[in-house]
Image 1 (tube, rainbow, N blue to C red):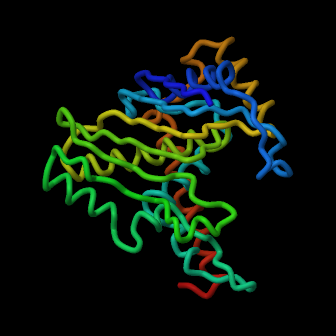
Image 2 (cartoon, one colour; image 1 turned 60 degrees about the vertical axis):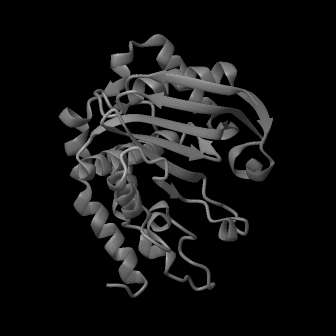
Image 3 (cartoon, rainbow, N blue to C red; image 1 turned 90 degrees about the vertical axis):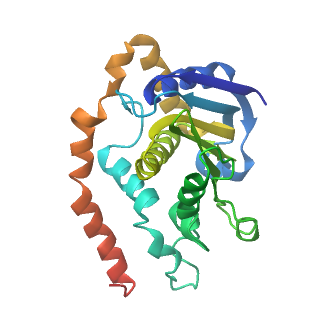
Length: 265
C-alpha cells in the first residue's frame, strides 16, 4: 500500500490536494467486508493530511456530502455528546441503540478530555496527552468497530497541535466531517488551556473511497481541476457559522423525540 503525505495551510486546500493524490496514487483493492453495500472494490492508500492553520479561512469545502445541518449535528455529537445516551439505551432485541460514540469513549470509563487538559497544564512539553478510542475487548466483537483509534495533543511553540489516527477512513463521505469535528475539539481545548491553535495532522492507515462513491469522487476531481480553488470553498465565520447554529433547536428537538421514545427525559 502506498503511503501518501499531503500538507498545506488550510483544511480545504489540503483536502482538495489529497483528493487529487488519492485519484492518482490510490490503489484499487478488493472490499469483501462491504461489497454488498459499498461495491466490490475500493481505491485505497495510507494517507496523512497535515494542516498548518486549521482555523484559517476559508475553512469549508463545497466538495462534501454534508450540509450545514449534518455538519453541525456531527460537531455536537463529538464535542457535546448529544448522542451518548444511545449507548445505554436497549432496543427490543436486547442490543444497544448504538454500540459506542466517539464522545462516549472519550469520557468513559473515565474523562480522557479532562486528563488531556490536566496533563498539559502539568507539563507543556508532555507527550502523554492522549485520548484512546479503540476498545479491544469490545471492538473485536463488533461489525462496525471504531474507525478512530486515538487523538494526541502537544503544546509546541505556544500552540496546541493535534494528531489524529484512524485505522480506516471513508475519504469521500466521512473525512471532512471527522476532520471538522476534531479541529473544533482542538479549538475548544486550546481555549481552555489559554494557548493558540497549532497544526492538525490526520492519518488513516486505510484512507479509501468505496466503489459506490467512485462517481461522486471523480466529480470532485473534475471540479478541482476545472475551477479556481476559491470557488470551491466557503468562509466559516462569515457564512457557515450562522447557518450551522440555526439548526441547533431543530437538532435538539430531534434528539429529544428519540430520548422520549425510549422513556428518557
